[in-house]
Length: 367
Image (cartoon, rainbow, N blue to C red):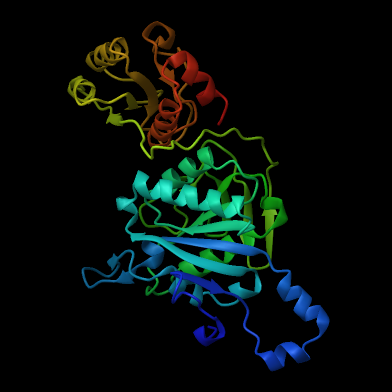
């Protein structure tokens, strides 16, 4: 552990902590010119802390109980040995909430801070600390609206900061290591945990407690990282992005979970309560009962966009397989799970895309 005294903190007046390698005046004046140049040349990484398990502390409820969002971003960085050798770090506390409380208001705040940092050339990369429950949704939202080649990395932890073998420090170190790697440019928003690098579109939380909770069931892993190296195993792919709604509002889109003996009540209720879109977490290849299908048809006739996704953990929902999507005017989610399909539909609606003809090609394109 390095001492926090070795990290000058300039948060008193700005509410922002700037952390960089500390050298006294005497040390700097006697250091070789090459060392001084090396320190000046370190990349600049903006760290945006939002809370989550990585910021949690143990609670007495159970052996694995904890309270999320207790430790600050500044304290997190101070507990990561050697990270100050990777980059000049500037830390800002965007929020300090449990992942289940993540919301679109915080999403807009994060997105606009990233856009400002890149537009003003404040940072070469951004790292976001985040809870794991909704990390894939935040990553996908940001990946859809951030159109800059500079890396944006999300990381977190499955164990709180006070746990035995807490995984947060290692994940934080590796997230910064990926952020400053030149090969990370142009890859969109990435998620880094447990020595793996995954894409915002592909990644999903697949286990309630395992350290290896994040998988990309429908897409390839992007790469691997450890304290020694970063290894990307997929090529950089072109990306398309949607405008961030200026009014900070996302249209109401509801997810309806399909099950045996399903009726159309939740679908009809969503329409009555003003939903502009409905995502069906269907059985198998996005299937529902006959009663629910009739409800979905009523919704599309009322001008509601209906997307068929699946409650299954992997696989694509294809068009016109068991359901005649062309006839009903439905959208097939392709590789996107219900929670990501919901976000993409919200952003498309906010950008003036209101018909299945306009929306389906964007789901197909792997936006």
